[in-house]
Length: 296
Image 1 (cartoon, helix red, strand yellow):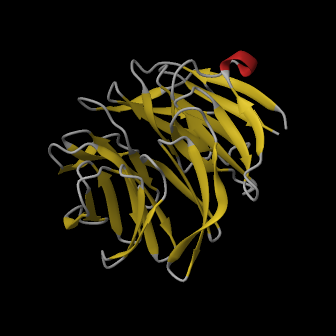
Image 2: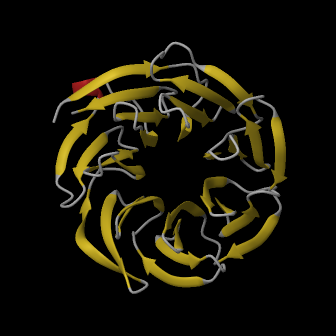
């Protein structure tokens, strides 16, 4: 496996916490501690464009590809909808005193993960709140849709599984510390968390079954896990400043991307996306930079 750093995008004035793909495969969006929402072009790395600015930090954003509206979470305030054509703020949904960690679309619902155990379900068209779901006080750090269920990762180490009727169907202690990110490939679920482990699960008969023993994948918390467009690899980004590439079937380590060998990040890696544009991997970090990687 060959690793090449294609470019580094600079311009944010604070840590980069969120990355999101665009409809145009060459474009993507970033947001973070400075409140800027920036559009980047993988074909023209010097042309970052600030498309919105909010007060305070943004940990999460998600593009509604049908409406062309980017949902951006403003911590302790709520969610704003940015029309990507007019670049106007077309709606705001108050969520006061809530840190918002993830947004996921699920049919006509939008599920929002936030602090103090709160999941807020919003109607995708009307932008009205449909439901509040609360299981304890542990922060809800991530969400991932698999078929007829949505998986939620909590700061108490549990993965909790809900159906579209807002019912808690299953709960599993997945990590010794916080569950930060979940991704799936077929029926296999992969979770990462504050215990620096990556775990592989089979989802059968509405039950999570550990498929492979958990392995210490990094030396500090893992903030993000993503699947390659080809479906063969996983990438993990960690507080230990490294990105690691894994075989999706066996979890065998294929490559370590760090500063010493590849000119990687100097601080915690907070977010990853694996673009279908030339299969480029994009990483965002506390060092205020975004790096682009070619992996062959």
